[in-house]
Image 1 (cartoon, rainbow, N blue to C red):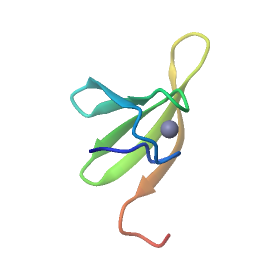
Image 2: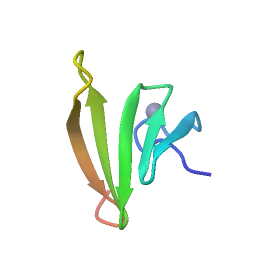
Image 3: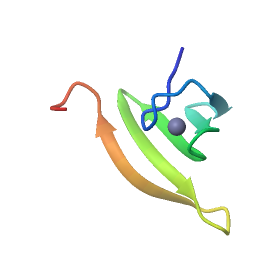
Length: 59
Ligand SMILES: [Zn+2]
C-alpha cells in the first residue's frame, strides 16, 4: 500500500499513471524510478513542485 511521502498517511488516491493525490495534505506526488516529487496545486490548478525526495539517500 502506497503511503503519502509527507504525512505517511494512507489516504492516497491514484490520479494518473505515476501520479497520486493525498487527501490528507491535499498534495499530489509522482513516483519515478524511486524518486518522489511533491506538488501542490495552486489556485489556478497548476502543480507547483514542493520538494523532491530520493528514497535510499540520507534521511
Ligand atoms: Zn499526506
